[in-house]
Image (cartoon, rainbow, N blue to C red):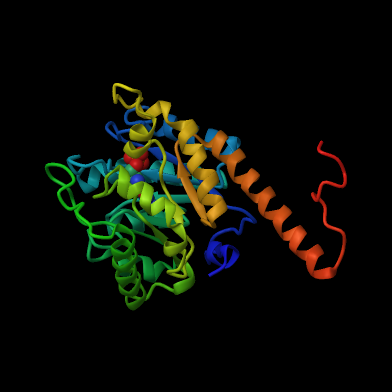
Length: 308
Ligand code: PMM
C-alpha cells in the first residue's frame, strides 16, 4: 500500500491534506503525563481551545487515566468529567474525539457533539461499545490492547511484536466490521506503551508500513510515553519527566507523518503542528519531482540552481 492511500480519509470527519494533529485534554487527576492540570470543566475547555489555536485539528477528551495499574473511575464520575467539556468544545466548532472504554460515555459524548470515539480497548472493555458506535455512524479508533494491567506489563510478551500486533488488530477490525461499523470509519492504532516495553514501541514505529497494510487510516500516539523517556535517558539511566519529552514527541510525529500516518495524538501541539507541515512539504516536493520526471520536464533540486 502506498503512503498516500494508507493515510486515507475517515468518513464523517473533515479531510486534511497532511497528517492530522489530535491534541489531548485529559480531564483526570492522575494521567501520567498531564494528570490534574485540566481537572475542571473551565480549565479543560480553555486548554482544548488553546490546543486548537496552536494547530490541533481534533481534540481528544478523556476522563479516565489508562496508565498501567490506574484504578478505574466509575461511570458517573467519567460522565461528569467528560460530557461538559465535549459539549462546550463542540459548540465552539472544535472536532472532538472522546477517549473512553465505556459505551454509555461514548453515546452521551456523541449526543453532546463528539465526532469520533477513541477506545483504547478496541471495543473489548465494554460489550455494548461496538453497537453504540455502529448505531451512531461515528468513526471509531481501534487500538491494540491486551486487557487491563495489574502488577505491570504482564501481558507484554511477544515473539514478533509487529506480526502479533498486526494480527490482533486485524481480528479487532473484523469484529468491529461484523458489529456494523463501516470500514471507512475505522482507524487503527498500535497502542504504544500498552502491554509493550520501549523496544516493542520502537519496533512498531519502525514498521508503521505493516500497520498501514491493514488498509485503515493509522493513528500514532507516542506523546510523552515511557519509551521516549528510555530513549532520552542520561548516562545514569534516569528518564526525563513526561513533560520534558515534547521535542522527542515531535520527532516521532515527523516520522509517523512521513510514514503515512493519518493522525498523531499529542499533548503539546505546537511543535507537532510544525512537524506534520514539514512532512507534508517534503511529500509535496517528492510528488512534484515525480510529476516532472513523468512529464520529461526539468527537475528542481538537481543542483543547477545553486546550493542555496
Ligand atoms: N494512549 C493514552 C490514552 N489514549 N488513545 C489512543 N488511541 N492511543 C493511545 O496510545 C492512547 C490513547 C495514554 O496516554 P495519556 O494518558 O497521556 O493520554
